[in-house]
Every structure is written in C-alpha cells, then in structure tokens.
Image (cartoon, rainbow, N blue to C red; front, top):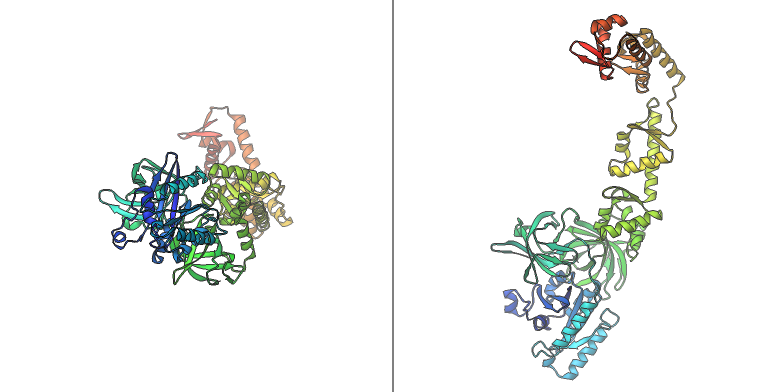
Length: 632
C-alpha cells in the first residue's frame, strides 16, 4: 500500500476541518480550546484508507496568527487540498497559504469549494472562476475544482475519487533513504513517557530501534510506534507516525527537532540557499532579519545576499542564511521566510548546501558553486560538495548525509566520475572523495616539504614519515596521506625508506669538510680496533667543532657505517663482522663460553667485553645462559 500526505490550505472558517471530517469521519480539532472557539489553532491529523493507498491529512490552521503552525505541517506533505468557501471566495490567508505551497515546491493538488449548501449555484460558479484565475500559471492551473458540502455530503464521494487518483499518480518516495521524522508535536502520556509525532518524510522506523534527536544529539530508543492511531511494529515514509521515546524527558524535545538514525546527521547554523521573493513582498535588503521555517522548525536568521545588495519583489537570488540557533536541514529541503515583524510570508526556496563555509557578499566563486548546486545534475553537484568539505576532502558517508542519497547508488555514481577524472575515489571502509586539483596541490606541498627537509638536514636520509604527516596532513584522514605518498612513489617523485620519505634517487652527499670529518672518525674507530673510543673521547681527540663531529658521527650511525653498542659506544661495522668471523672459526654452534674466554680471545677489558656480548645476544648470534654464552 502506498502512503501519501495531503495538507489542507485556506482561510480561517472556510471549512477545512469539517471537510476532513466529512472525508474521514475523524474530527481533527483535538484541543479543547479549538472546540470552544470553533477554529483550528494547531495541526490536526486524520486518514482516509483505500485498498491501494492510504491518504493522511494534515489539517492546518487558517488564522493569520497561526500560520507558523500551518508551516510546521506543510513541510512533509505530498499534495495540497486548497479549500475556498463559496460564501467568501478567496481571502488573505487563502493567498498566503497558496504562496507557501508554491514556495515549498508542492507540485500536485486540487481545490474544494466548500459550503455550497449556503449559497446559490451561480455564486458557486463565480467563486470557481475566481479560483481558476487566482491559480493560473501555478501547479494548480489544471487542477480540478470540486464544489462540496461537508454538511450535506454533496460532492464528497467525487472528492474522494479525485484524491485517490492524485495519490496513485504521485511518484513513490525513494526507498533506502535514511529515516527522518521532523517533530511537529510532543507530549507526555502517563505510563508511557514522552511521545513525539510527525510525518516520516524518508526511510523507516521500527520498534526498539536506536534513534537520535537533532539538534542536541540526544540518543534514545523507540519504545513503541503508532501509525494513524494504530499500534505498529514499524513505520514507513509517507505515514503520520507517533513515537514513544525511552529515557527522554518531555523538556528535552520540542517541535522543530528531527528524529533520525544515530551518528549520521548534525545540525547547522548556516546554509547556502536559492531564495525566491514573492511579488507581494517589499524589497529585501542584505542582512535583513527574518523568520526561517524549514521542516517543522522556526528560527530567526539573517539573510546574507551573495552578489547583490537587495532583492526586488518577484526576483530570485542566491544567499546564505545565518541562523540564531542550530537547525536541521539537507540539500534540496524547502524553506519559507517571513518578515520578522509583522510576521507575513515574503519568500522561500531550496537549501543548496547545509554545511557551507561563511561567504563574503562579493565572493564570485561561492556564487558559481551555488549555481552548480542549483541544478538537477547530480554528477555536477558532487565535486562542489567535495571541494567545500573540510580540507577539501569528504567521505562517501559525509556526501550521503548532505544529499540524502542511498550509499550504494552514490558510490556507483562517484566511481563513474572517478573514471572520467573528475574526482578521486580513495579506497577504504568509508571511501574518501577528493578533487584531482586538490591532490595535485598536496603533491606539490609534499615535494616542497621533503626538499626543504633535505636542505635543512642534508645528512639525514629523509624526513620521518610521521613528521611529514603532522606538517601537511594532520587534519586529513590517514587514507589520504597514504594515497598521496603512494601516488608520488609510483611517479618516481619520492622514495619511502622504512619510516622516512626522501626524494627519488637522492643520496646523501657530504661536503669536503664533512668527508674529512668522516675519515677522521672512521680512522679513530678502526684504530681502536676491539676497544674503540667512546663518543666523549672521540670528540676530544678530533680537532674540529664538536657539533660538526657529532653530526657526522650520527650520520654514520644512520648509514650503518658505525653500529651503536651502548649510548656512547659504537664499533665500525667491519670490526663487528671480524669479531663474528673469529668466533665462528674458533667455536662450533652450541659451544659454550664465558666472559673470561671472550676477553682472552680478543684481549678485551670488561668495559668493552660486556657491552659486546650483550650486543651479540641482541643480534641472536649468542644466547646467554647463566654466566655463559651459547653460540647459535
């Protein structure tokens, strides 16, 4: 069965609630004050079931004071039922509700001319003609206009048939989307706790599912579900849903919050948008404060215009909305803006980027990016989102969050863009996306950093890998760092030596002075034979700047010309090899010998014998057993 939401729209006392009751048998006025005053103050809900489709109705208030409540219900509807009373025709709130529906991008609907039992037939026809003129050029231009009476029942069955036809003709909501339920009501029930309601606009919910409330990032679990007042184990997109939340206090949740899957979305206080100003509105100046409505949220915001100082009535522009408080929205979500005071609707549009950086009014590049996002061409949008991500890198899951697209189909699309060279798709459990030009910038910076390190430390083989990462890639994922190094290595631009990175083909070249110091150190160490001088003795013996001697000494250690035995004692590589050969010539594997035997063999003092034996143990040439060594 398909699930479609119709929203009522129209002026106060034009019979919206009575019409919904005539269609469904349900009185959508739920508040005692509404019944006493005879008007709808807040949202009401009802449903009409057919064999193949279930229609949910969001009955909205018509009084101008309660338009913000109307907006809380309008965001999740698929089609509109515009209600015009035959005894009053089109009135101010009729026009404002109709403007709101157009600004929200609602594409289907029909018109009911109500209270036909109170006027003569000619007046009904005249009202229908006025309605036809008022909706000319809009999404209701070719819609049916049906005369009905909620009191007598005239026209109600024909209206039901029309509603069903429209419902079946509407495109189905895309499967596989992440669950989003904008909260339009919240209350407490004795014995149950906190309950929130809303229209599930995407995805599905099930009993015992973990959920998150945004803004606030409050985690909870679904204790129970109701769909159109009936207990259910699950709810799907397009259904009016009540959710009983576990462990959440009534004070922690309010209208405007969104119930969704944990750990995916985050709220924003800034959004790039395309803004359409109504012809009836006054010119909108830069940084004007407005009331922003998106989903079920109402929040104050400033409109930062991009590329212009003001928007004239009936015109469109690109802008950045800067919110006073965090709200939840995604790319493509509709929004409405109303004047700060008096609160009248002046415009609306679509969210282009829900997590942008802050732009200047004269930022031409930002304007160009917004124009690309303001298209139906999804492949053209992806590089824009990637470019504006943190450090110009974005995970595939992050892109899914912005676009509200299914991960599998989005990955396939990104793979196609990667094959065409428009983006890079870096493999991993959650692949990362990066523009080729961003990667080239990182490559140039990497080569420059390695070159600078060679210049500053000419005797070191290369920059430590971790130091390079900290300098250039500290804010970037490890996968990006590895990808850039692998790419440069494959191009023969760098060489990776264990934990260091060097320019490809580079070898350490000592200066003439450095070569003389190396020769002096090597001569002193070799001359010492089996008992070479320790570092302090070496520094005292060579007539040169001790700092320069130390630099060459440690370079010789890195190059393994010298091998360190203790902190201050090093042997020449050839001397250690000679010691090993001598032992092999004198002893067979498994033979045992003590410290004294070793000292006698090489004419050593204990000062050198013990460190040498411990070195041979570390090399697994010998193994200590008690006071003896075993030749391995």
